[in-house]
Image 1: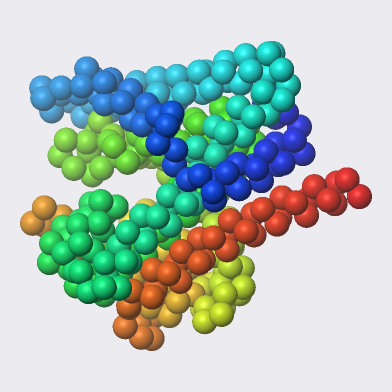
Image 2: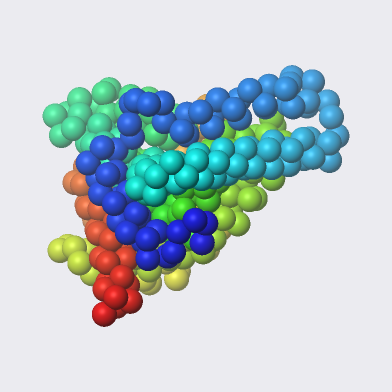
Length: 328
């Protein structure tokens, strides 16, 4: 553990989750992930200029490794120094700083708010508004989507991010407090910014994409278990179907991790996810997950948000039970 025992860290994780339930992504001070993104953009502009495409694939990969290592190191060191300084000033300040910054690495309320921004226009038949807001959270073209496809895009995004924005940062926070959680968040931000299989980032973003896969490997599988448990707690969801869906469909997803939460949610809700997506005029066929027992509808956005929150409740409950067992 970095600075704290696991019991202290577990208590701070519970507090961080509660803070995120209430506050969400703070508008002030500037969110740390925004600063990380600014650093990545600044360094990318120097390592991967337009002429970077003229470099050999090996040279581009080496520069991408440099971007990855420098970003991870910077995030970890700055956070560790801030935590050490606050702890030196006063132990309770150290607790507060660690808890606050852990809360900024998770986004339970942020995911819910983004999903509800899509749901509310759908509820009132405002399709153009719904298409606009779903376009903020997915990379695919949304201008022609109807309700079932808008719902699919939203559900897939929330499901996938239960790993990236909830379980993974909490796992790393439990192992190493805010510094390790922020290191993970840096890796995830790198993947979201340069980890694409496009002409521009195929080689330069290779290291960031692969490292994000490595860091999410165990948390993704833990998330699958949590989603099965969450489905058992929600009326109208099927835990058995969620488990069967993971086993049958998760491996079909191009990501070694994202298929687990997406297939779990599809199975739990009895809907089919995946299918045809359009990216800037180019059509892409994604693996289909789950069984289309019924047509997707806007209510599935609510059900997915409920699964998201149930997962967070299970994490809080598990941490408190582990603490009670230790103290007993």
